[in-house]
Amino acid sequence: MAYRNKISNPIIFIFLLICLFYYLFKSVTSSVFLKGRDKINVVFYGEEARFYSLDRKNVNYLLSFSNLVKVIVPGGYGQYKVGALGKLASLEKKPEIIGKTFSATTSSLVDLYFYQKKIIVYHENLNLKKAPTFKEIFLRNSNANFIDKLILFYIFSTNNKESFQIIDLDPFETKGNDSEFDYNSFYKKFQGSFFQRIYRNFDINVQIVYTKSYKTAQLIGQMIEGEGIRVVDLSNQDVSLRGCLLIADKNTTTTKAFERLADFFKCKTRIGETSVSDIILELGDLEKEWEIK
Image 1 (cartoon, helix red, strand yellow):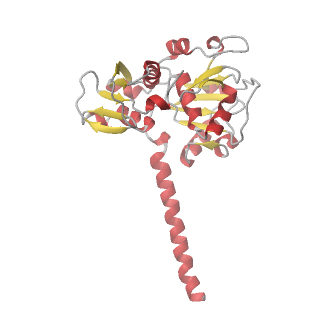
Image 2 (image 1 turned 90 degrees about the horizontal axis):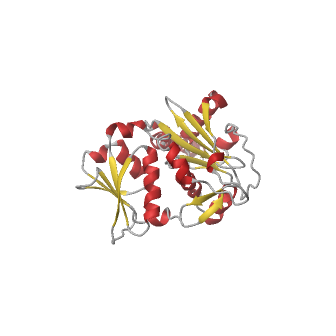
């Protein structure tokens, strides 16, 4: 028995070591901060909903949303108050609703989102604009991996409130009990504030092909434009497809812009000819996933 224990203990240790290295390897290779992007967009959803656009070299932005304002929830859910988004996401068992909603609201591509484990509706409007805490980063649910959490904790630990340019959202919220967010005014004023400069430098553009909803195609187009990738055309076609599809020539498929769209929207990719643009994005099932009413 003792001889067997001597053999099994090193085997277990080696197995655990391999698992640890694999976990670290996956965390490093999937980390959004280690992909060389200019900006990382992060949402902390809770008693105070905050959107951060973190820039490696220039301005960091902070948007703090009222819990009482209504925003459009992609996926055909209509409008919900910001304070009720967490409950909706929990009941639907779709935490990605939080990331998608703030992507639509800010006309950007949200990389990471953090949210409460409990089903809570936030009725009060705090507007504290406080920095995310250790608890929020490490103990709340999130789509961030361990490496991203470490980097975020370092960023917020070494920066104070003065390191972030706060965008006042009051002018974009109608008044009264049924306050709504003014998407068009916000988009016109801040389009380009959260984009990746590297995409503009390569001047890659996109044609979006939709089947049913022009409004949904327009929303996705604004998000892509907000990321810094120019959208040059919205086209309608009768034939739909499963999933979504990105088409470009061989050289374009290796660009950061193409990789960003494929990674964010989880699209299939294909090498092919394009005429109107550098990249064709056929929405397919994305129309349902991002449907707005």
